[in-house]
Length: 328
Figure 1 (tube, one colour):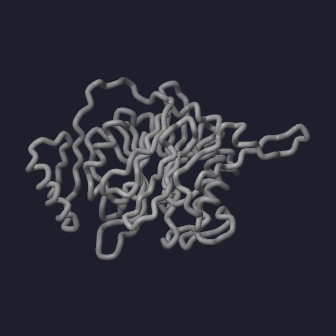
Figure 2 (figure 1 turned 135 degrees about the vertical axis):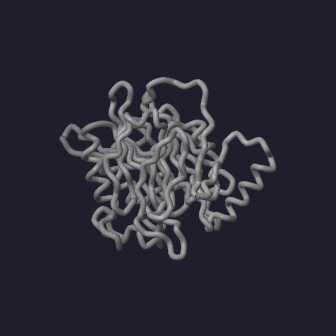
């Protein structure tokens, strides 16, 4: 599985999609920039599920924000979309493994400070609202309670939250039947992050608060996954950070076979987060991987991108991933 904040790169760098699909059956995407006037590229052999804001940016068909999941069609009967946030900040996905084990994954995109869709207030974010309604942490917290009683829950996404090397707080009941904090070192859940920047927005505090409330921890930077401590966000204006996370219970770390943050692709501003869950969701293994064809609906806004790809790929004559532009 892969998580990627594509920041609209489905349109500007369509080849990135095929790059990820070489190694992933399931792809979680945030900041898709989907809108009512612009859908998502069609990928042969794969199926989309998404949620997006019902508005477009001024003078363009491009949207903002948005989350999506792209998965192979042959596993569609094992994937169910349970809930889509009305403000397109998160989407709940239920995955049924071949052993009938249930896994719930919520893919999230929480806008940064400065966005009119962002979280408001300096107090506990769970209690504060936004210009567009309640904080996303409140319904998300309720959903975690609901779905954790039915199966294992994981959170993935871009939370625009900087946590440095801090970890969520885990509680246990002592001999006096009182709740006490457990030493992270004793539990083996201490983490290291290459992002040591300040949590200027307090969003990192709010994310840690959410994890602590549900006895979940941040997996980025745990010692068992070398490479997961890397930075994930590289804005073109500078200010690298870690804001993309994989989160789950301490007891569920054994379900993650591998987890790493890949180098940020050229031209992108977020890295891929690759993680493999210890579950089989395929009916059969296919030894030969087919060529994936991505179809992008052409508009005049994409004319420069279209021209660039035609020039680059027709001049080379050899390109393993075919990109077909629909001019209709």
